[in-house]
Picture 1 (tube, rainbow, N blue to C red):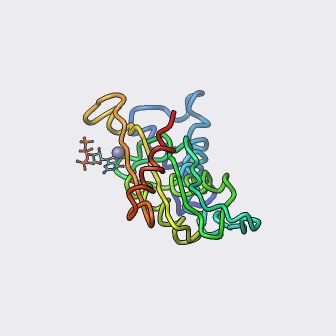
Picture 2 (picture 1 turned 90 degrees about the vertical axis):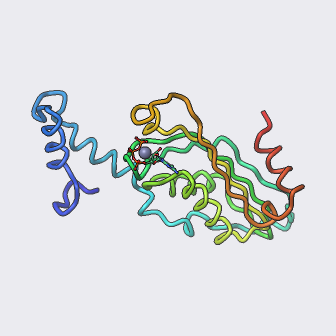
Length: 191
Ligand SMILES: Nc1nc2c(ncn2[C@@H]2O[C@H](COP(=O)(O)OP(=O)(O)OP(=O)(O)O)[C@@H](O)[C@H]2O)c(=O)[nH]1
Ligand SMILES: [Zn+2]
């Protein structure tokens, strides 16, 4: 969303929204809010402008042929549900079994951000992370676990606080090989 582009949702629309809930957009505390919220939504939806292929540039693993699981845990997730535009947030764990290529560890967090900064359901977010790793890194296996709290379920609707939704995607060896999956889950869950 670009506030200088009249064809897109911007400052005038947020002013209208503020009026529609009975507020006065010209009062001191709200004067800067439409511009601020426009910029905030541009940030929360920046993922539409990001390309997972560019993020996941691989580098050869220096001849060391590392062939064990690589697991990164506690990757922060901030997203918005496509049903209510309400935040959902939590953490992701990503594991993969390389096949000749590894990726910079920070790129896994960037990949999560790229898909989380779009309107989502948690299930699709989880699958997109896993599928793009398979597509661009061609590992032997990928496992993704996402745990989130959904504000549309806590602050409204069913209105229960603190429920956690857990989703997972297991591809390649992690789908087919029970021992491999057990190892990933042990690494993912270790305190
Ligand atoms: N599967 C899935 N559902 C989600 C996610 N985020 C929100 N929802 C659900 O989307 C559903 C939308 O249901 P609707 O009946 O169309 O909308 P609603 O009347 O606002 O539903 P309530 O939240 O039950 O009041 C709700 O059950 C939400 O809990 C998500 O990431 N995955
Ligand atoms: Zn929702």
